[in-house]
Image (cartoon, rainbow, N blue to C red; front, side, top):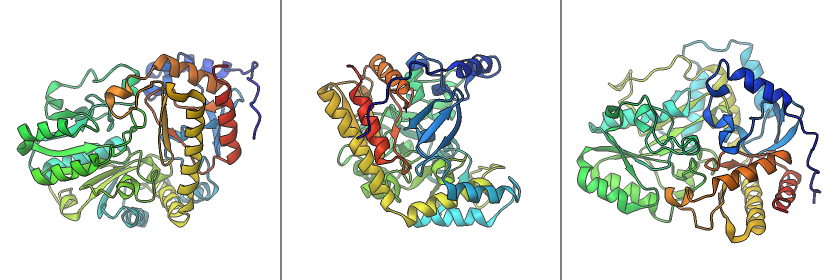
Length: 433
């Protein structure tokens, strides 16, 4: 087993500090996404220079084992050679055309072959765009306005869904956002994840007005919170009973829990599915899709408008085709990364005992600094975020790169070796001693 690396007392962050101070002069907070500011962990963010395999390297010359993986999509690891070569070749033909290509079709066919419920899909440029568009389609198809979401689940930053959101919004203590008019969110109903009664009450009083439920099948934006047995099945049945649609936001779980996503893992089929940048190998891309009769509502076939100049661009689709083809051809990747995640989870439980809750499913996991079983928003937010910050800083100073927020997931990739996992566990055992 790998030895615990000595804490690098000479670890330098001077260039990161300089870049951060300069960035704050021309970028809000110095970052282009709030969680990157490291406010919740009380330190200057690490500025990354490059990445390869299971590691990232910062501008000060420090190397880290990476468990953020660009927030999930780098399931093969960073700079996977086959994907990089395909992208380099595609770039020689031009970056974007704003016109149809055969690669869009090939990627859509690949997605459908892996996730059959996505009979017809539309490519977009982000997960936020995918969820926003899926909601619009659900409203157009049902002729209803209201949508049910769950407290602590995050579906992107579109106005109507930024209500009781999770992820960075939890750490930032901003459950809602200024600049979002009340009229934009009046049709968003909030239920409690893993609590069927809260959903039942909304449908009993407003069921004829509800177009859809949107849910992360595994909540991964308040930390990783698994669905209780029967919860997803309940959502499937109540939407069917009331003529509403069920939308699975698989921006995180899609191609992470298996080649068929969470719906394949749990054997519950939604009406619409949203996917994120994993279908582009980490490049800016997303998708939403479902049954043909529903997706026929989308322009130019139907009356629900949605468009995007960069949607389905040839570079992102190239990366996506290569990534999904590799995952489909080598299903043993999922066995490997789940085993690695399980080893890490067991190491955490062994070290901290009952003072923490460690949730793990597939290659997703979270440690919560609470003795409670974390199964919903209330139990997730019982975690001691100051203790997490201390833990994060210790791990970072020992070359282990984790999410700078209690309420983000930890991701394992196929590039993480047995040595990486062993070294991480050894570092972990030194915490608090």
